[in-house]
Image 1 (spheres, chains in turn red, orange):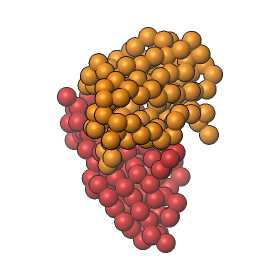
Image 2 (cartoon, each protein chain N blue to C red):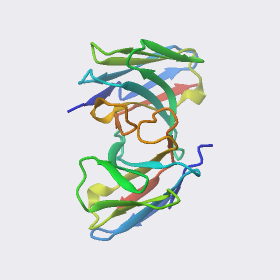
Image 3 (spheres, chains in turn red, brown):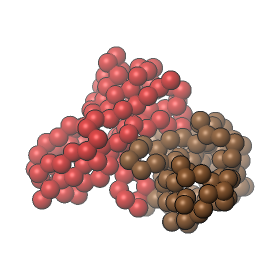
Length: 114
Length: 115
């Protein structure tokens, strides 16, 4: 059974700091891995999707890496801003295949202090 | 703007009651998934509907049921509410079927409180 965990559960950093969020999964046979952002009252927004054949994906100040063999992904946020404050979730497809039924991690609550 | 709306925004019920939550997506979104997110946890997959048929179910009891209508809007019904059903319920819709991961859109959720 696939399990996805995220550490730390919460993180508070001063504005401008670079930071790394971690995601671990127990079954390495994943089709892809996705990082989401969750703002209160606004649902989930997809940030980055990494296919199983890729090592990393970048979007602006965000960079996500994937190491299937070790069951790990990281989300790197450069030069953090107060607007980055949110909960960040990683997710992998249910049963490992090409499906949009997802298994989510427990999330990391990020607070960026001005 | 994702175009996925959920109603109601908040809801308070008592144990044993029944509740219906609704999800409306953009025209043509033929796939809808429902998730339950308890406080401080990640969302958990409840079930998915594809073209009005159930297409996969997570580890939830039968008192959680759903419907998808011809216009692809959807309902989540929960019978015999329990305190542990208190959570944020999210729906997600996709226009490209069940394997489409990069154009799946989430609604803002319905916050259900069971007293």
